[in-house]
Length: 81
Length: 243
Image (cartoon, rainbow over all chains, first blue to last red):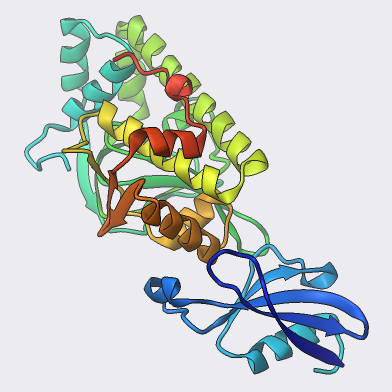
């Protein structure tokens, strides 16, 4: 079971974040992309800022919403969302 | 960019003269080199990994790049090539290409048959030295990129990349009032800098906010050269420019 915990992330620009826990282990940090990413059409999307273990992927994905992020994380970890 | 009327040999001469000196006979021999000129759209493969080309490509206008994909389909861009560069010159001696070359923007290219290149170099041994020097500088740029990809943070990596492109484009006469053409998307920058598009966008925005650069519509303007070279820890020595 995944648990999402809101928190600020010191990226300097995209600070609205979400810590993702699986059981009692931190598996990922997501941040909500700010208006500086308008040129990429990604404002409001969630970005995998950091992933640990199986979520430490080279191509860091973005997600349209937290449900999409939850589904991707659950599938990669092989756990329930 | 280079005006369309520019003879293909002119950009090659300008490039070689940015790193060495040429005699009038050598310039004449390059001008006489048979070249087939072709316009190619953006994002087209020119030669692919595994190909055995019988010709070399000269960029007359536009930007090309050299790249390779991982098995998972992730692309690393090794180098960007600008007017005057021959991105697949190595095919003259390495029969099978170990990476691919493609256009980044729409390009005007000239293709030179290997046999004509060999004939030119046989008749003008000093040009062999010039192309050897160019190849060594290509290697020096690769070393700098390796240093950047392996050891520099995202901001430094991006800043030094912008410094390098401005310096190289200036050397071949493509800088106008502090502005150079740089028709790269954030995705292409990401593939070259080994970063996500989100990280590239963050550092580009940061360099803009700090009034070091302006970067829009495929053009890069340096606003604060001292600040940008400091941010990029940039020393142009590795480009070995002659002037």
